[in-house]
Length: 167
Image (tube, rainbow, N blue to C red; front, side, top):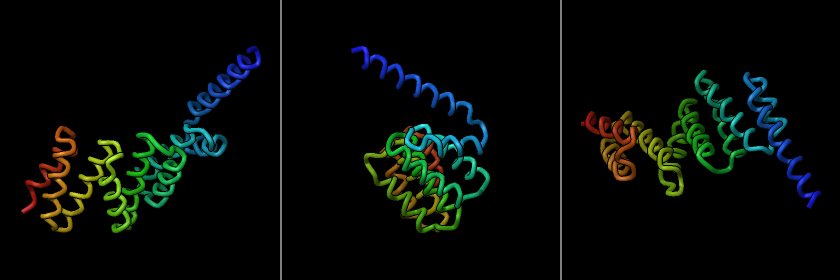
């Protein structure tokens, strides 16, 4: 019993130390170092996600795509992993890989096990791509799909406006 108690205390202190290291990682260099040092921890995935978000914001889409893919692999499941998958798809679009990006968005949109907000955003971006390409029937289909899935989301509202603007 004593050994189990000591082991739990040790694990708790280790976890607290990792959390403190993550909180102290305030620069890209520190986030990169943290992710490398704690690659088996879920906070490493969050550090990679933050780095990918920074790259996407700076229009460094190839770096962002790589970062999002690494973050998704590290996080494995959950809302942050889903957001990383969406970020990777959007980064593909930003880097000129339209077919790959659209296919990735479609995969997210069609995945019933995906989080509703992430699916809604992916579906909206597909509708926007269809609108930009002049595919009115696809815009209608995708906006209808979005209205049925999550009618109160801001993505559904955007899709409704997008649909109204398509001839």
